[in-house]
Amino acid sequence: MTRDAAGDLVAHLQRLGFTQYEGQIYVALARAGALNGNEISQASHVPSSKTYETLRKLVDKGAVAGFAEGEVTKYVALPSAQVLARYRKSISATLDYLEVELAQLSAYEAEEHVLSIRGEPSVQIQAREAIATARTELYISLWSAELPALRPALREAADRGARIHLMLYGETLEVDFACVYHHSHAEIVQQRIDGRLLVLVADGLHTVVARFTPSNQVYGFASPNRALALLAREYLGHDIVLECAKELIDRRQWDSWWQSRDDLVEVILGGKPPYVERPLPLTSPMGI
Image (cartoon, rainbow, N blue to C red; front, side, top):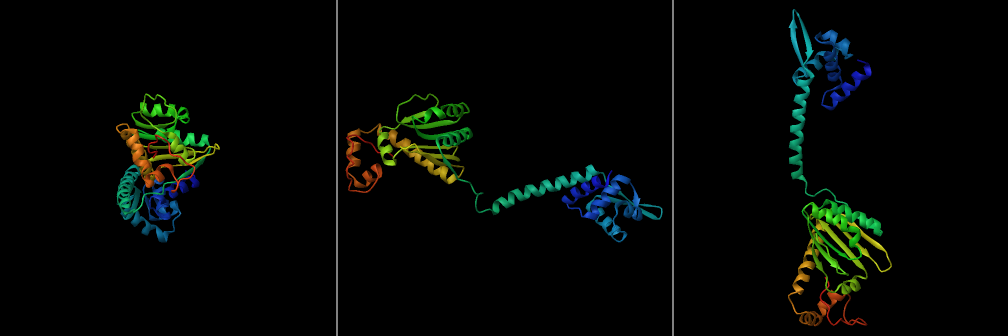
């Protein structure tokens, strides 16, 4: 064994908690067999003044054993498989303990990044990556113009067993792998937000939100933040329930009701009263 190879072994033993001298002596004994104190000092290059003290520590560690041969005490390195198995068991037990106990000390979850995204290609990439994580459920709200680019990824999610709830704005399209809800008056939403909006949340964890402006600017964010995912999930869930509820109510009564309240008109159409040059549509359900 070269000196460099022995040095590498010692360095790795130090990572287990051996000192420099302990590592040198253990490697020397493992290579040479039974040696007395003077022989160990020469073979390991450990000063004789430190050799016996170091040997006592190695015996306490269970890495070296001593035995009498006549009037001389000799030492041998215990089998490496036995020594390493004991260290492996000890380290595993320590890591298992720390994993449980340290987690209970943490008051906050690890920081979850929020990635700012710009441009339609980037939005599509982030949306597809989020959809690819869905295993149980996927809530998504988008316009018919954005559906073709995401349809293959959505179908794959459905094939994996994810239940998909899709709120679709704009053109009525058939989607046979999802629960589809067509927004009844998307033009109100488009006017209020001045563009189109894409919102999706996969398995209550991965969220993507993007806005498509009339000037073809596209921007938004993607994040695994659970609070943002909960916000998106609640928004989409309420939007779906509201659209379904509208189907059970006479539309003229519905429109008459919300148009008679300034607070709801402000929420639905945006802005603050009085409303100037913004006539109310004859039939226009709430667009939230």
